[in-house]
Length: 201
Image 1 (cartoon, rainbow, N blue to C red):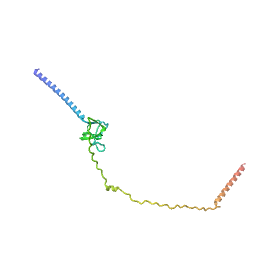
Image 2: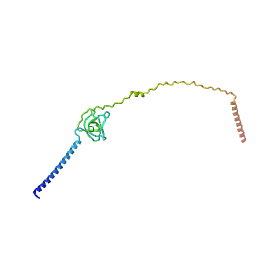
Image 3: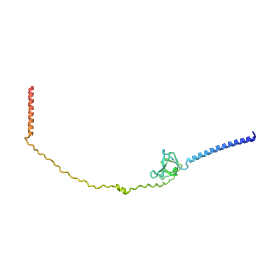
Image 4: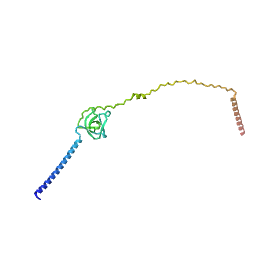
């Protein structure tokens, strides 16, 4: 083997080793940069809020549960940038990515980190829905007035007639005969009782 061939062999070997080392270092640095960028992207900078409530919380279009609709939800532990706080410090304005704008969350359900929030005036309330009016002609069809009827009059009953009974019986009538008959039976029974008593003796 000549010196020229040996130099060529060592040159190729050394070139291969250097290429492999360069690729390895490049891959390592690239993955490290990706990790750092991912961490930077996942960790919000500035003032942010973290959902501390156990259940998902509602994101509303303004600082009220009555006047503003629900535009989304945040899960427990989710972190989003905070933009401001309501004058009463009950609601926090956040940057809400799904709508590409802002939203409001109740302050008791989140914790603030990274600084002090500025007071933000609430947005105007949505226009109230137009309430339907009642057609007066249709309403008049159901407005039925009762017809005037004459009240009944009280008619007193006729006077009560009490019947009169006259005693037409006379003394010495059959009532006296029945009395004599009963007394006679009593005497006959007494005599019969007296006779049976004497005979038994």
